Image (cartoon, rainbow, N blue to C red; front, top):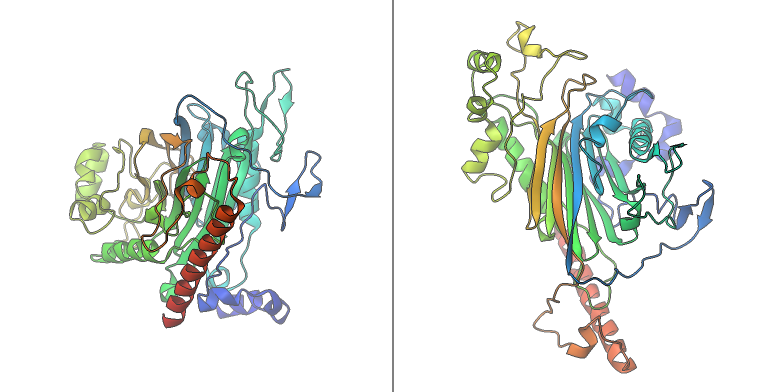
Length: 459
C-alpha cells in the first residue's frame, strides 16, 4: 500500500495535491461543475463553444395559483469502485415509468477506496463517465421529425413546449468527494428559475474527517421553494454497536453542513445555511444500516421472501423508532429484497456462497432514500436489478409542490425596515428608502460573516 501511495503522491503531483483534504479545511465557496459554469463565468453555447456570459434569470410567469407540482426522480447506487463502460444503459433506470422534471442521482464508491484515492489527488475520470452516460440517457430522444436527437448540452435559450415529445435536461450542479458523487439535473425550461446553488461537503471517514465516508449536499432554490439534497456514505460494519457510529455520522453531517451566501435578493428571505432550514430535504445514499439478526434467521427469512419480518430487524427503523436518528423523517414502505451484498454479475448474495463467518456479509437494506418537508409525496420506491455492482440501485419518484410566490420575510426584531421597501411586488420609487434597505442588508450580512469567522477560529 505504501508503494502505491508513493506513486500517487510523487514530486510532480505535489503542486496539485489537495492539501485541504488532509487538513480538513473547508472553503467558504465550494466550486462545482454545472452546465452554467464550465469555467468562471463561462457558458456552453449551442455549438459546444465557450461564450462569456452571466446566467439570465427571468421572473416567474404570472399564474392564477401560487403553487405548482412537479415530479422528482431520486436514485442512489453504490457501484463498488467500478468505472462504467460506454455500453452501460441507464435509460431504463432513469426514464421508468415516465420522465421526471428533476433528477437527483447519487453514487458511492465511484472509485476504489484505497489509500491512494483517499489521500491523494482526486480521480475525476469515472465521475465524468457517469455524467456522460446520464446526459445520454436523459437527452437522447426521438424528436418530432422522427430523427434521433444526440446528446446535447444545456442551451439556456431552448424553450420546451408542452406539446413536444421530449424534454432536455441541464446539469444544475455536480460534486465529487473521493468516492461519493452527487449530481442534480433540471428540465431546461425550469433551469432558469433555479437560484442560490451551493454545495457543502463533510468528511467522516479516516480519522473522522477524510472523504472516503461522509456527505455531499447541494442546496438550491426553485422559484421560491428551497431544496437540499444530501448524498451520504456512512460508517460500515455489522458488529454490535456499529449503528451508533452511523447515527453519529448523521448527527455530524447535520451539524457541519453549511451553505455560505454572499448576498440576499431584495425582498426575499436569506437562503438556508443548514440542511434543516430548507423547505424540502432528500437524504439518499449507502447508509450502511444492517439487520440486527443472526445469519441463520436472516437466511431462512430470505428464502421465504419475508421482507416485512426482516424489516423488523432493520437497524435504521429500530434507531428511528427509538428517536436516536432521523427523528420525524419519512421513508416509504419497502417491498423489495435487501440491496446488499451480492456477488458481482450475479443474483446471489455473498452470504449464500461464502461459508466464512467473517466475510459472508449478512444481506441488508443499506441503500435508502428518506425525506423531510411539507408538500412531498412519494409515488414509488423500488430497486433496480443491474448486476454491475455488489449493491442494487434504489430509486424513487416524488410529487413535489413548488411555491411561486415569495414567503413572508422574517425580519430580526432589532432591525427596523420600512414595510414599503420590503414588498417585492411594489416599485421602489423612493431612492433613499431603497438605499437604506441595501445598507441594512449589507450590515446584516457583515455581522453574520464576522460571527461565522469567530466561530471558525474558536473551533
